[in-house]
Each structure stands twice: as C-alpha cells, then as structure tokens.
Image (cartoon, rainbow, N blue to C red):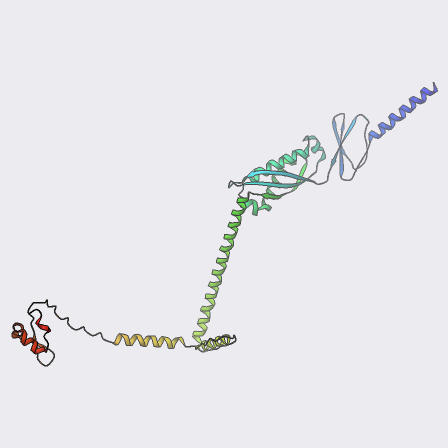
Length: 313
C-alpha cells in the first residue's frame, strides 16, 4: 500500500514538472510571443519569462529582426524586347507580430512570392537602358510597391536592391559598340568646342596685333627662337604679309595695263591649178593688184624670184 502511494506521488510529481516545463517560456529581446488561449488571440507577450496555462495556451514565437530575402533569378523581357535575367535581394522585418500570425499563413513565403511577381512586372515595363542606368529609381519603386502589399500583414519592407542583370552575349556586343560610338561623339564635340575657343582666342589676338603691328615682328623672332632651339638645317626668312600683298597687287596692275595685239590677217587659201591674183607693193606694206601677173605665170615667178608659184603649169 505504501509502495503504491509512493508510485502515485512520483507520477504526479513527474506530471507536475512536465506541466511546469510546458507552461514556462523564455523569450529573447528580439522575440515576441503571440498567445492563443483555447484558440482565442491574447495579448502580445515578451520578452523575458512567460507563464502559460498548461494544455490551454499555445505560444507562437515571432522574431523582430530584419530578414534578408534573396529573390531567385527571374527571366524578364524588357519593354524594348530584350531578354534579361535579374536577381534581387529584399530586406524586411515584422512590425506587428499579431497581424503577421493572424493575417497570413506564412508571411515569409508570401513576401517571397510578392517580391518575385513585383520584380517581373516592374522591370518588364522599362527599357534596357533604364534597367542598367536607373537602378536606384527602380529599387525605390520595387520597395514602395512590395511594402504597400505587405503592410496589411504587419511586414515592413525596408529595402530592395537589384543585384545582377544578365543579358545575352550579342546584346553585350551591341551595348559595347553603342558605348564606343557615344565616346567618339563626345570626343568630336569636345574637339569642336576646343576649335571654337581657339578661334575666338585667335580673333582676340588678331585684334591686339592690328592695334600694335610691332607684335607680329616679336612673334617672328619668337618663332625663329623656337626653330633655332632644335638641331636641324631649316632656315626661315620671315616676310611681312603686307609686303607680299603689295607685290601681288603690282603684278596684277602690270598685267592689266598691257594691251593685247591684233593677229595678222589670214592669207587666202588657193587651190592648186587655179589662177592666183598677185599684186605689187606700193612701198608702205600694202599690195597693189596687177591683172597681168594672174595671166602670166612666168612674170610672177620673175617677180618673186622663185618657180614655186607655177604650180601645175
């Protein structure tokens, strides 16, 4: 009888210790407890020592620390029909443990799905250039949209960052060519601006030289000094531009003063076998026609001292 009583007491002690172990909980500083008593939501507990009614209360632990959520790579097509593979990371934390437990079944899995769908929808509506150059703006848009959807669950999304953007190799070559062309365009613009500024400075220098002509002589001497400083065989003789201009004007004036001479009259063409009309000179270079010379070839030959005028006679 005594042994039975001892056994019963031992069993009761063990059951009491087990009940005491299940009714006592210790929550850390970053943890909060959501207690359900017979299925009814009670006040939030923690941190520290928490006492529960055995077999009646049920405790759900919720961490308040920021959680790093790695979004798996998502296949997207940008607005300009360029395929890309994007990975991102999101940071969130629980600000209301009661709503995080009662409003959604699994807030971490739900937040992951919201992040994936929002990433595809937002990045699919932008161009590739915006995706590569405006990441900060896209990160803010993603954070705002995801946080709006998770706020009813007691979840606060603090940050969303696009980690990597992978594009096809052929698009990488096209982007490289585009960047090279952009660099060349900038170089040409900078060169043109430099030429414009240099021309403006040369114009100002010309105005100074026009007011003080002696400065051009000093420039000549400076140029000779620069040339003479190097070991070469170049000899430079500076000549004023106004002197050369005067010589050119003088040559033009002499050319315009000369009168063109009239060409001598062309001799008439005489066919072989036809009678030729010859005339004698009158002493001043003119010719006096003589009808007898045309009818007497021998007399014409004697007159000119040659027989070539006889022709075929």
